[in-house]
Amino acid sequence: MKRLFKFILNTIPRPILIRLSYWVRPVVSFLLRGKTYTDPIDGKSFSKFLPYGYGKQRENVLSPSTLSLERHRLLWLYLQKETNFFSAPAKVLHFAPEQAFYKRFRKLSHLDYTTTDLLSPLADVKADICNLPFENDQYDVIFCNHVLEHIPDDTKAMQELYRVLRPGGMAILQIPQDLNRETTFEDDSITDPKKRAEIFGQYDHVRVYGRDYFEKLRAIGFKVDEVDYTSVLSDEEVIKYCLAKGEILPVCYKH
Figure 1 (cartoon, rainbow, N blue to C red):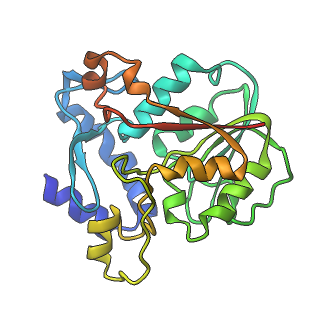
Figure 2: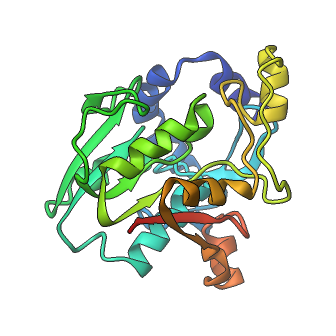
């Protein structure tokens, strides 16, 4: 199973994977039905979750029903329990929309919801994150999760995110982060895709962020709350929802 998933992830283009998933999900969900683990996004439970990873694969992390990963389920729980996202009117900009969220957010009638990306088939607006076609101070909420590690000029991207967020607005800017690393690591001289996947987590990542990521966001102008939401949840919930213990949610605000 692990080898099959690794082969699929590394050989089939992502747009095709998205289309195939709509057919495969119901079958896999039926085969793995059970009561051990629960996806909080749709409330369905399974005997186990699926493995996932481009380089080293993580066990029991990919929900068979929503295709959510640890970070998606953590964000959903935070939004559900700690914010008014699911009830208050808001203008939302969502970069590279995740399948686990896309249709659910789209159905929320109180949201003015726009998706954007250069490549995603789910994007309403095809746009470069470093040169956004949106006016200043437009959005109440921005989601830009696991995007910045792909962007060579992440400073410019962060500046654009700050520019289009309205004062008082919230941006959640998740990234794959090595919390044991103090400083961010980049090395353009590493060109072999397999080596890049080994070092950076994916062949198309351009850096590994360290704890200085939060300070970089603050230098752009954001007020940053480093939210360890798994510490708010019980150990039983962390296991039940298959979360990554200690993962930090970068919840950012514009002054």
